[in-house]
Length: 155
Image (cartoon, rainbow, N blue to C red):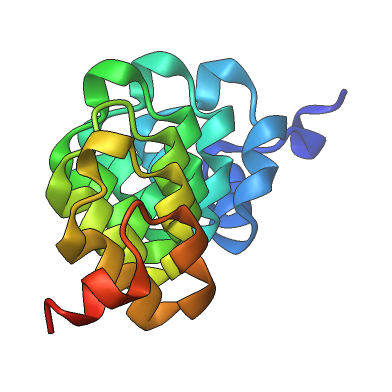
């Protein structure tokens, strides 16, 4: 290939800023943290094309803030409370990818969408979490260990 046709680092950077999925075409030798951050800023789900060693806290946080379900591509050791909260606040279905859910993460997820109660561990289905879920989505009562009358008594 003639040198004038070879894409440059700057050309790839511009391209991933426009469409994060272009990252899958960027040669491994040019996948820097800068390019990866630009890609996930444009499209959070591009995190799956970021090399493992570049899936830093910052890159993962930006990715899940854009696309909560990108949490499935976040390495276990990088799944912090902050990253998980950002993910479920963006998309309640991200809760199913949280490795160690906390009561705060579960509450944030059901406040985003009550149906997320289906992914809340039994031990974390507190009256507060269940009430928040059915307030947002009444149909979520089917996933609650409490009856509607028990939850209404808490109000």
